[in-house]
Length: 130
Image (cartoon, rainbow, N blue to C red; front, side, top):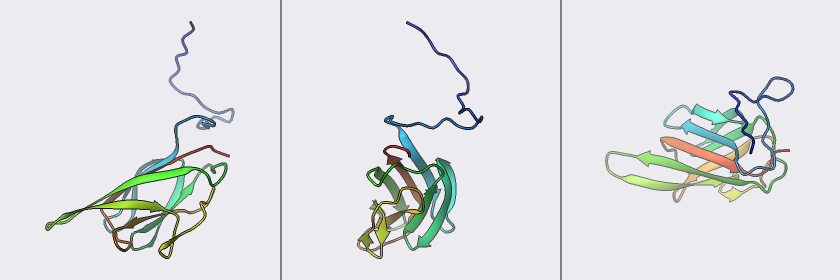
């Protein structure tokens, strides 16, 4: 059996290697959404946006191959009076769902009877890159 040891793997241009056809998250991000939306850390995210109360946009650096990827995430909200669990829905459109986008402004929203801001959001996309 051979052993491969490496400190850094790069593509032929010297940048990050692209994962394809593997079962690993192709995009992930942790956001501070308490007031101004701030990206704590991420992978394959070129930009984020604060679209509306409880609604955020994520633009991937490398596109997904099609709209069949799986988007999942968590969000956390806490106040002095109670703790609320909320679910993170992908591709909101004014309370409804939109077709998943492969390369631009994939949308997520935090929902608990209506869209609401929370303190933190974590999300990830599983699927194939283009």
